[in-house]
Image 1 (spheres, rainbow, N blue to C red):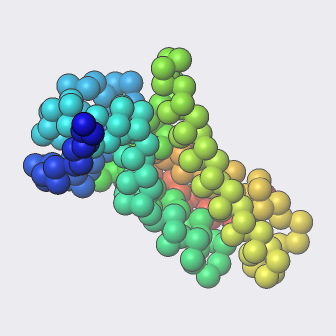
Image 2: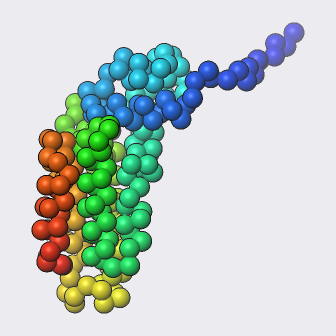
Image 3: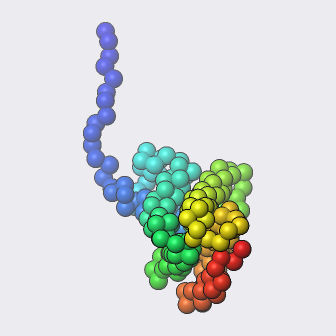
Amino acid sequence: METRKKGPSGRPRGFDADQALERAMLVFWEHGYEGASLAALTDAMGISATSMYAAFGNKQELFRKAMERYATGPSDYLVRALEQPTAHGVATEILAGTIRTTTRPSGPQGCLGVQGALAASDSGREVRDLLADWRNDSCCRIQERFRRAADEGDLPPGTDPGVLARYVTTLAFGIAVQAASGVCGDELRAMADAALRTWPPV
């Protein structure tokens, strides 16, 4: 006699997955990948470990989803920055967006993409590589925008778009580290203004 396999019951999860992911993102943002314990994550998400694994996978997969949310949420200023009409406007908006995001009055300071896994054990190597790829992708997108600016005559002849993109991203990531250390937004804005006073710097 053939036994039929039961399909999914269709019962709702009983929690808001979008809200749970938002809370997980904030825990990772504040504590980093390895500093975010399973207990801290599930407590913030308001779900059991079993529900977390069923909905999001293991801790690495949860972090990957949290990072995707971060990229399209708090860090989406990069998309708007790349749409600025000039290279100087692009750099200005990137640094302004970084400062806004990393010095929010409520929520974690710093940048999830920078501090999430700067130092990681072997078990966190994939997460560290994921964040390195995210940072390098940001730099490449800025480089492409600066290359277009050079082709359009918006940058002086001989300007290296790759070096200029690395300069801006280094400033942005440095701002994130300083913000995480407690440096205030006003001081960071003054630093950004000083860095962009002479443009382009290379």
